[in-house]
Image (cartoon, rainbow, N blue to C red):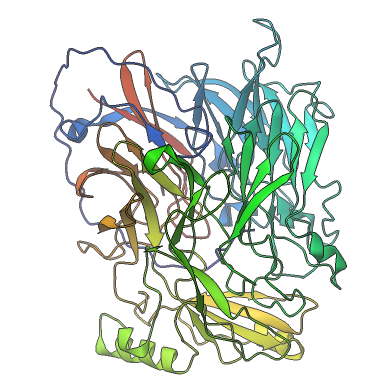
Length: 636
């Protein structure tokens, strides 16, 4: 389940790029090699690397070590309008493995960037898909296999047409013993809609626990109530045989029509020591009307701990009751060690709330309070009287007429009038017939870019969005006429039928006639929080939408943090890869990418040399510059 409508956002580029001063410096030291074997580096998604060759003192000397182009732009397809190169490569057995938006998997030499092999999943590019993105692949090594045996190292990934595929890491050929000729059909038992099979997909890397590969799904959920089942499944990594299934919303089988989704479309986390897998789930369908799915809707909008070997429920924590805002748990849960050695988990949310829990039993380590929230006035709807609030909140939670902003007086007045004409009662304002302001909007807070955790400083680093959304429910009898009427917003939005609910949907983001957001900047930030105390350490704008101004930018993609005292992130609409000081947030280095960097970088050290790698292919829905680049940076 994804959240970003196909809006046409204006782009601005910085007018000048500060030249890099490359100084030849030789450092006589022994550098240990370090890899990046999982999407979030470790199974718990900390996105932390012990690599320290690149540090605060020398990061300004970074230069491009190699570039590889995937050829994805050569695909002749209308899907390019949605395509997003969101992949983070992994490094296993001295090979970089990554996936393209069209489900090609590529292995590269990590030192030269030369292609070792490529696998084409033969995706039908003539079909329509809800999302056109693949964030990455996973790897599993068979300890029982002999050296040189086929598929001793398996590369596993999901596709836009809902297949789970296993490849030989050495050759790129399908593992014939996995499923049917290397594939498992994930649409089986998922109750996918026959009208549109492109609404049930896999866009995130699967997770590995022991000899199981565990996978969720991405579901288009606003077009109808009875969409696909949001089940999570564990398959035998050798044979592809189904070992267990977990349904986040089993109560949905008793609703009429059957409620769908509640699915896990983001990345799952694994605790190998405790054999637990942590599932982030999204909303039950549809997102903005819950009259057909009464109650809290557990375990949608939650993080749930399952016994990884069996799928048995251990505990759950719901971050939103009865979601009416598309507030999926989009971030990978972060596993870390809290004070006194307590095993902990962090849940980042689109609301900007950060929940810190005991990993073993799900009890809060920092206070959580149930607070009263605004109530619905829609007939047939029953919103939750309270919602959970965390000690840590990363973004503003209200947007009143007095908060309106614009570059001109006319812009400010337009924004004020828009807010006054809408319902805007702070965070969790329910959708309405007149139109409601949702702040933060459904893009976040924190989205799929997730967060990074520095165990030396016990700080969490996350990219946030601060963009108000506008949501209006449309009586079903008026829907067809409404879809042919131009809306009064300056940014085109998204209509969704939500069939057969009594209300359809129109949603957009609130931009003034200038094309800039109606709230004051920054519109995107990178933030650091001390997870032991819950206190914010620093908060700086990420990117810009206005040349030469630190406005921050709408962003998709996440940060990583290194032992060299650096945070690397791209994600913003100005297409820069940045390095900032992990102690202060001060920007130390940036490089303008040849295309949008809507991905999370990674880093590794091979033969004593540290590299930083980013996928730069842009984002079709965000309208950043598209491309097909993989770039690696290193010191001279």
